[in-house]
Image 1 (cartoon, rainbow, N blue to C red):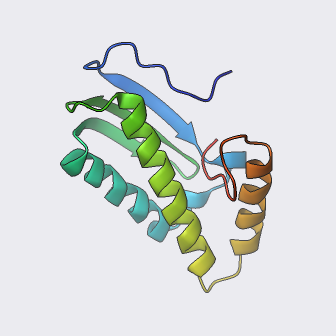
Image 2 (cartoon, one colour):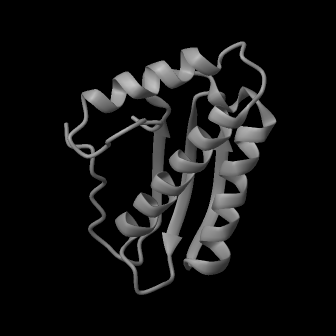
Length: 125
């Protein structure tokens, strides 16, 4: 199955769901959840994404949105995933608590090895 989202109506309302690689429970920690929430807010305020609803689970997010900007929905969603991936991996690396740090980074690194578009760590499936 293609990893790319297909949006056929630029102004349409869409439901998307994307999961953390290996379904790891990243969002059980507030500091990582806050990065995602801040990024969603940024998409609303600066990217022209109108978010109707979102639900963050411990290992995935559900999102209902539409674009009210010239950018295509797949571009805005790709930017959101790329930015949150980089920021969350950075936050995990900088976290002083070691209890799951190496475990998660190891899984994200292995997931990236199987991807043709991700070089270092793949947070999202």
